[in-house]
Amino acid sequence: MGLKQQLGNSTAWMSLAASSMSIVSFLVFIIISRILSPSEIGLAVFAILVVEAGKVILNGGISQAIVKREDWSQVYASTCFFLNIVYALVFIALIWLFGIPVTEHFYDPAAAPILQAMLIIFLLEGIKVVHEGKLRREFSFKAIALRSISASFISGVTGVLMALQGYGVWSLVGQQLSGQILVTVITLVSARWWPSFTFSWSEAKSAMRFSSPLMLAQLINTLCNSVLEFIVGFLLGPAALGTYRIGGRALFILQDIIVRPLEQTALPAFARLQDVTARANSCLRIMRMSSFIIVPIFFGTAAIAPEFIVLVFGDKWRASGELMSLIAIGSAPLLIRFQVNAVLTAQGHTLWVLATTLCLLLVTMLLGYFWVQKGLTFAALAYLVSMYFSALLGLVIFQYHFGCSYTVIMKTIFPSYIASATMLGICLVVKSHLRDWPLTIQILSTAATGAFSYLILSLLVFRPEAKNFLQEALSIAPAKISPHLLRIQQWCRFH
Image (cartoon, rainbow, N blue to C red; front, side, top):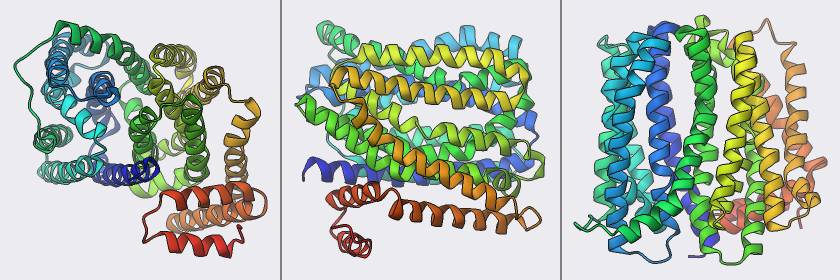
């Protein structure tokens, strides 16, 4: 199977897994959000933010070191396994000694026991990192996807049952713990590998040299994604954090479904390409093709966000609707940042990944500090501005390392954003005439308007982008889907 087909199949499986996990998690979150108050949601969210940050960091360095290494080495893999266990234990100790007191003093004492109960997740995550890296380097994304789907379903049922039994916030804790246990066990079995009782200091130094900048970058990157929520919690309190989280919760699903799979599969694909030009061209092609679909989805979500929040979560969360619109627009350029980081990592420029992520963190912290005090709307605006800053900075660094002209880069990225912004404007105009209609009708009508207007714009104004998307889709699509794409291509007269 060629690299294109591997990337296409891998992305499809990871999208399926992300969809299943996110949908189950979202449904559980809806049930609990209708039962609990914003303050109670804020308590659980704070602990989940800490755990999510730690998990991302643990996966950031060692897993990618396993993926990037050309040949599988039992000694190297075993060394990385024990090294990651140490990392996990250090995480647990640091949070227990410092994180818990900070939570009690600066946030809310009621959040401390929730965080303590979830610390075991770090060890469970650390155990599986090398095994997952082995699966990724072998493009065994089907196994990863089936694992994630099974675990998300079972843990979701656990969370729902606990919520219905009146466990409240602890149903979220039960969902997190049961899901992590299942994911770890299934990953260990699927990888068909177990470490030897060997540890090489030279291999450990090699792994740390490669992974340390990436782990630091992941720490900074995770802070970039969550620092605004932490600032909201510390400055405005648990209720405000709960409201902000609801505004972004549905968007996390979109990110998991349509952006994260490309992030997870891009590095193995780029790492297999040895030519610098080939890597640059592949990165641009992925960004162009993906932006054609991903950007309008986020802009379209912004159009229906206020009505969606009230319909799904209830009227008590109405304030989250405007936040969701702003966060949706700010989420569109995530694809650019992830792809640029992946291609820089494949090229060995991990220090540049660290530097760009550090710049994003500083900008986000500055915007957050000065804007969050003005209210939640300004917190969402801070997210939006920081994400577009990160994307532009990433494109500048991409041009510096790979020598692509800015004209080529702009032609790759801008058309999708221009078409999507135009579509959003049309949707808002149409929606302004539907305010007295039922929420469901408003959402469906606005969504249909967005889909139709984007289709017309693609066929009449941005034909090169539509043609390129279909051609790229044909090159990676399974045999059963290709005839349908060919018919669409003929109908659109893309010859």
